[in-house]
Length: 407
Image 1 (cartoon, rainbow, N blue to C red):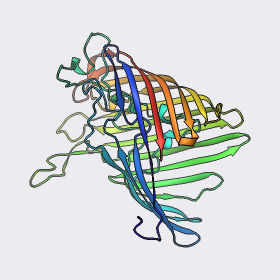
Image 2 (image 1 turned 60 degrees about the horizontal axis):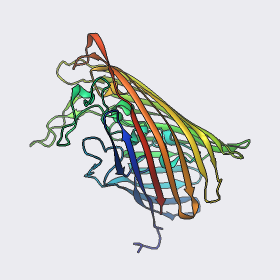
Image 3 (image 1 turned 90 degrees about the vertical axis):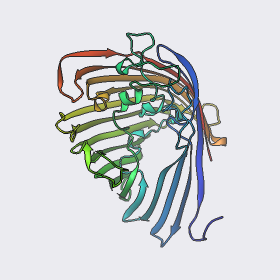
Image 4 (image 1 turned 90 degrees about the horizontal axis):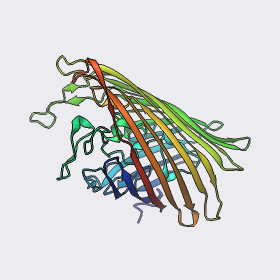
């Protein structure tokens, strides 16, 4: 029952699950997990009309997943045992004026969040430019050994313990291209001929801005956006939790990370043919600073992802989306491993998504292939080595069957 009669209340969300068959070049298995592009969640939303032009509202959103497909790996046998099975995603309050725009405050999405995920093709749970969401926690096997995983030749022991390079590190680096949620204040302009601008400031020492567009032109539906973010405090304090506590920075004290990223999705309305692409470039300066004389270093990385196909209501129950995808992720691993001076990862895949309108549901199948290598060319402090070594890695092949139902 609602707490009062002035503010509306709506409960919504969805449940999503995947069956993942995988082969890492050494072993193969089947895991069942939540997540991927859609992690199960539930939300409470509400709003109240203050005047004909002014409304206020709120959002509470929680993720709900026991095992996440981006965290399962060869070591945990598919049992993620997520300690944060119920996790807060969003808690924000907003005030919107029809002519002046919206102001939002709280924990949640800043201006560039979801920017690279813009898609008109209905790829749903089967595909996303944030490809590490599918099996990103899997350890990468070296191609020069029979049962050895990438980092330092560490193998997966019989007790389930595991170490090694993950596909998440190889593809994302230190952070997803889909912006993390933060405590923030955001302003959004009113829509002008389909364009909106968002800008936000957030903890700690973070800000971002994004330009978005959505509209139709000459039989084409178009959606896209471009954004920039800057983070100058992702440091590591020493002694936090001690008595007395210390928040003095000891690692990455002078570091700055910047992202320039965007996406564009175009669909031909009569035929349902579509193309969706996204790309980004990241620069991190002064990593490793604050370690008492250790060498600091900087890293640049980039990615691009392209998906294309057709989306039509062929069977009368909802649109069917058939697609192919390809992506490249360059030098992202160098941002999390000081010894790596180069990395390259590619992915491609095929899939089908069937939307079932009567049940607010989708069912999908997809095949995904990942391959990568990297070069060791620095020591533990980031100083260049006289000789470099290329580490060749085994491919990961994955077949997914999944579903999502909304409520």
